[in-house]
Image 1: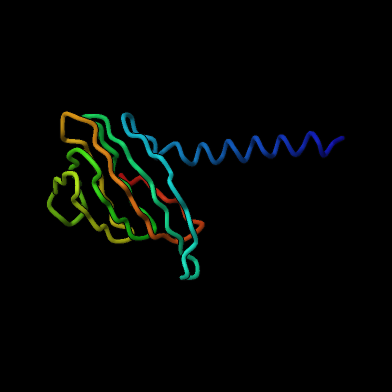
Image 2: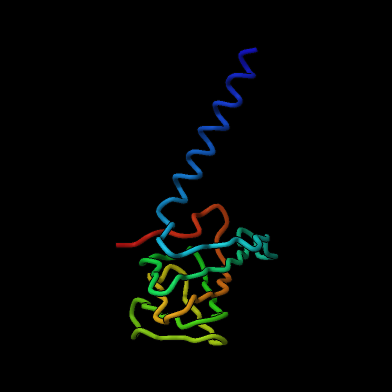
Length: 133
């Protein structure tokens, strides 16, 4: 009987910690949809694909990833601020490569919705997104 009470309590605590861990990555007007996560043939690495949708004027704050970030703009116009580079505005069909650990931010600078396909090649077991001041 005691085990039945402990297991749900542990599940709630774990679920809460996962949700809290994800909270810093939430940005108003930005929606991230996980598409796939797969192990790679390289030990300790995985690929993660995410579709990111931006409302007009919405921005995803300064952050970094524990691996490469490969961006394909699906629609709209997105401005990228990447540490050590001038700001760049990309439109549908444009691509971008961001090296591991490089702080960057993105903003929809158009009047319509914007979307990107983000493909990450990252170290497993590390947070996909770490917000940076």
